Length: 277
Image (cartoon, rainbow, N blue to C red; front, top):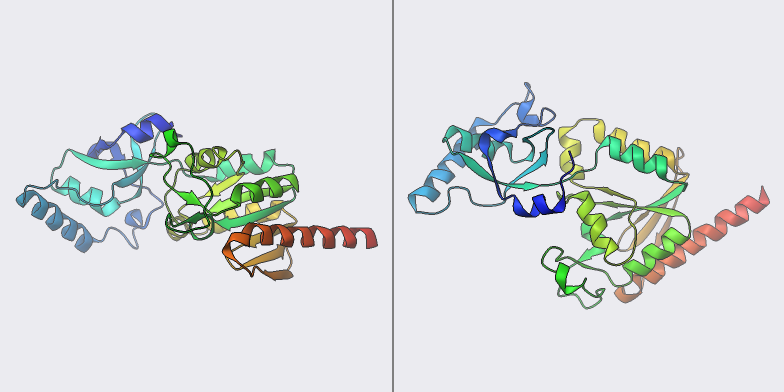
């Protein structure tokens, strides 16, 4: 169940009995099961905090998704939740996120008229340290506290260019971002992001082959995908082992322009190949 931005901002704690374990997580798998040593360590940590008159729960909140009609499904933090339950703690800090699921991907793909895409790592490539020199302007001041990330110089122009040339833009992250928040962030720069897949490594680990099925569903939609990194762009043709590797050399401030040059090269080669056939 998707959660609006206001509730995600205002909800800081939830009753422990409102949280439910994710049946696809290792925590709930009989052959793996809960790690009672980890639960015991968290219990001791909570008791030590209480002993020194500190909040019993320290560190990052439990990551959850809303359930219909009520309650929350744990995305990350099962052992900390179990430790709080064992100690009889009534509530626990939570962070509500909206993740992309199979149904969301199907809807995105059905609504897309494009046959090519780019895939970019959000944390490693697009988001950059605030102390870097080559950064895009920050978003308007009113949204600064909600969206504190800074992006690489030229990213909005690059995304406009990609959309104009018929590419769907897919962003990937290992973090538990809310997918709609990421898309809203880029709308502040007046650009559209078509798909966002977050917590990729962690969700693939817990969901078996579901992550691979999700990626196959995406790749089957497009004739080719261009994976864009900091130093290279890799074009992979769907269903084939053929690929082209392009180097993105030069100054950091020229990164977006270099990517555009690669896309223009790919477009020209595809046009020439089409004319030959």
